[in-house]
Image: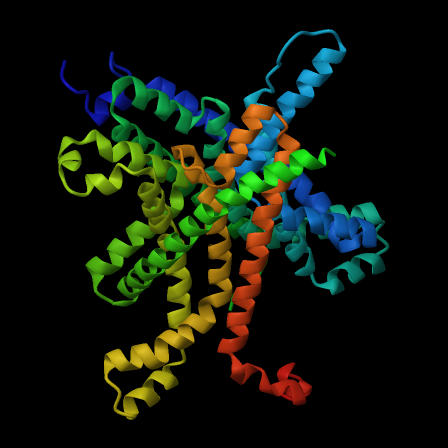
Amino acid sequence: MTQPTILDLIGTGPNGWGIALAVATVMTILIASAGFVIGAVIGVFGAWAKVAGGPVTRSIAGFYTTVLRGIPDLLVIYLFYFGGSAVVTAIGKLSGAQGFIGFPGFLAGALAVGITSGAQQTEVFRGAFKAVPSGELEAAIACGMSRALRFRRILAPLTLRHAIPGMGNVWQVTLKESALVSVTGVVELLRQSQIGAGSTGLPFDFYIIAAAIYLAISSVSGGLLQFGEKRFTRGVRRG
Amino acid sequence: MDLPFLYETFLSLVAALPLTLQLASSAIMLGAFLALGLALCRLSGILPLDWFARTYIFAFRGTPLLVQIFLIYYGLGQFREVRQTIFWTVLRDPYWCAVIALMLNTAAYSAEIIRGGLLSVPFGQVEAARACGMSRFMTFRRITLPLAIRQALPGYSNDMISMVKATSLASIITIMEVTGVAAKIISETYRAIEVFIVAGAIYLAINFILTRLVAFAEYRLSPHLRQPAALPAISTGVAR
């Protein structure tokens, strides 16, 4: 048998892994997006706690961001995967189930990635909030807007505008972090490449393909983010 | 809380700490040289060098570190040509593969930080050095590089912290550093939370000490910024 070339591997022919790789790519994007969204929600509340909270909430948020930014992401993934399994097994025992119950890898991965990116997004949103000129908020109060209206019409859009570049960075980090979820056995891009490398004996080809796909995802999303940034800052005068 | 278990875990994890520190420090130090080379390529004004550095930085920053580790550790062994060279003794060893991957990765990130530092050196300083008759190399060694290092240090410390965190990935290619030992204990005892607390505390302690050390280095390197303590108005910019 002749060795398949890289083109054979990414094709859909008899030696092709194209469809498997495409599905795995979608999985990677799903994990990264789920993690990013969870992180954004945490980030909004974390920033809120840091900006407007009392001493207790502030120190909890501070502890959270310090710890999660100082600990390897892999450890957090292990915590959620194994810790989650332990919790689920304990609950299973209570309700009469026997033996070990695994925690779904996708959920563990998305939560772990979300909580780490949440720590970064807390700081992004906090910085963005601080960049909103207080005069804008005063003007909104002077116009008689209620708290909710002020948040929806003034604070949220302006904070988002300042947050986009930082969020873009966090997204790139989150995307690369999603590769670590492969240790839980979720068949995302890297895990699929490992499977392919194992069964064909062509690790270099598969990891190069994976690297190229990651590069493509990050460049395309980087371009989209730049477009978004341009759109949301079209009211800002430059220079 | 099961204190004896925590203590036992702590002892086994601390035994793995030297390996983590060794991985991080060798990757950071080797990476710094490579990063300086890349930054100089970007600033050289020679197009092929500039484009080489740009492509390198783009590729290494755009792909996950784990993919890079796998490419070097598993990928290169695919070629018989590689396996027959003397490099194979190095590339066969997971430790060196991890060091090489971490080094190549950190170089891509810190090259941009160093480039920013080099660009921030005021041209007047370089001009003054040339006027004193220093050669190009001496100007670089005595004036540009020290000033650039001072400027780049805060950004560089972020990079060093992410490198300490990144050493945890070496555990995936069978290296028993702190995370590797932690994962082993977790899979033996299924007590993820306790092990996580101990391992996390160790990493936090490393990073805390690292930030303190960098802050100290920053303090030592900027005596000229310490003087205005007597004139707070100037240092805050009010007098201007």
